[in-house]
Image 1: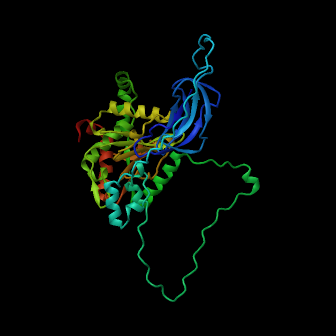
Image 2 (image 1 turned 90 degrees about the horizontal axis):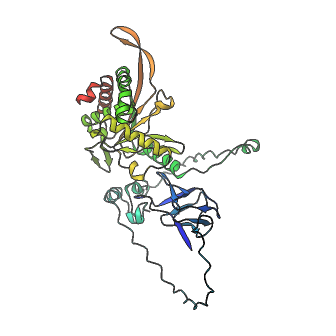
Image 3 (image 1 turned 90 degrees about the vertical axis):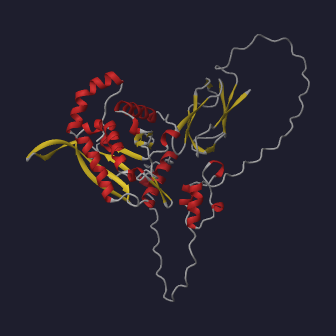
Length: 415
């Protein structure tokens, strides 16, 4: 008897995945719950395990193909090395009565499409769009806010053009094919779902937001001294290393309380102020950048933040993050300093309105008390949506983060 291998539920609003790779070939013995195939969605990579022990049968969907939730990927056949040992010989079989012919059952009717989300309906009305004409990407074809934002509003009828001839349009430059000698040394690889989504979201952030970046620098002397003094005791008590990210998370959550616009987002013609701090922490993996979210970070101590970050980093590299763990963030911190970046302008993680970029700690000459001394300095970059955050708010927010890091007692005293 064969057991079907199906695509599991992928998460809210995720309806399809791409086959990353098969770990087994047809005819290979498999164990129950053994990983068989890797699926790539636009958010995470996950594995589909064997539903039963046996032998992998036919593979119905090949690497690189796109499948929906519930699609049959292949089957596991009973028997082979992984099957149970054969039973004792049975007595001579008697002719069995002929089985009745199977009765065809009608296919179930497709579920009706869900109505558009309230935010999508409102934006569509403001733009003069008909939601019925917009293809929805949500569950059961529901039209979401992103679907409406990606749809161009109908253009009004143009007035009659003047008699003067219009200039000829400038043709787009065609892609120049590589010489044959170079083409033989090139490799064309299809983008993964995750990389396609990263590219699309970053481009949308640049197109939709009035993005601006403001910079400052922070003297890390006191934070480094505090960390060096307590790191061994901290790790012994809490079982996790004390890094710099927990100090930044604490400094950011305190600054967000004072500057709530930095923690808000725009929805159509409304501003949504978030009275909580769900801090996204950008984690680089070999398949792309993912941003798991530390929920209610303002309520967590340094140890809880470090444990959460360590867990996220480990599971991100193993492709084991859940989709819901990367949704709902209100503010993001990106640390390019771990790769040696000295300065950068991070791109917004839409629909969030701001992102903080950390960078490499480098000793530089600074004037302290009228004397030039070497200090461990870090450049900070805050990219923000100028539609909702004014320059004064952005600069003040960054200064508050700087003050908390240069005087860590502020983090304890909530100053």
